[in-house]
Image (cartoon, rainbow, N blue to C red; front, side):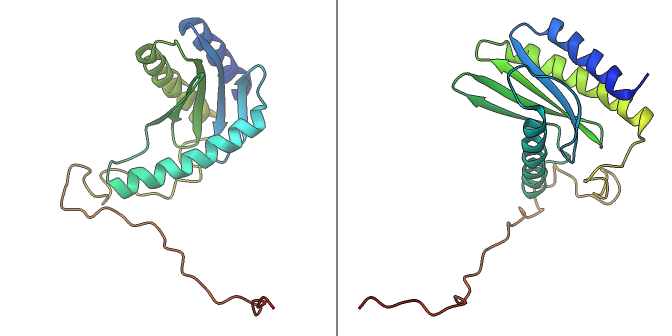
Length: 170
């Protein structure tokens, strides 16, 4: 049985365990859809946006010295979007209504993320994702509890001279 079928089965089981779950998507960290159950949403676009958000989340956790990425939650006027790490090569994104039990969403999202990680790593192998070259915890990575570590800086855009002469009004 293909990994996509196993992952889709997990997404369907997740929907039965979480009332008010509107959809779910498993994708690679590079934004390729593995499996989805997202009615009314374009899965490829959601996977691409998930990959972009994942990249920002990785930078935020690094900059703040909070260790490896685990999860990201966004709350909109009509509900939640929760993204969970699923190993090093995959990610799970859940769409939920605004009246979802957020604790239950986290509990089941984390469990499903771990299960999807097992399924994907068994088929693809661990450490093949875009962030696989990152230093693993305990391999020389700074301790997240070490407050002496300075917070990372983001790139600063330096103004450059225009390639053409600006027109003067006249």
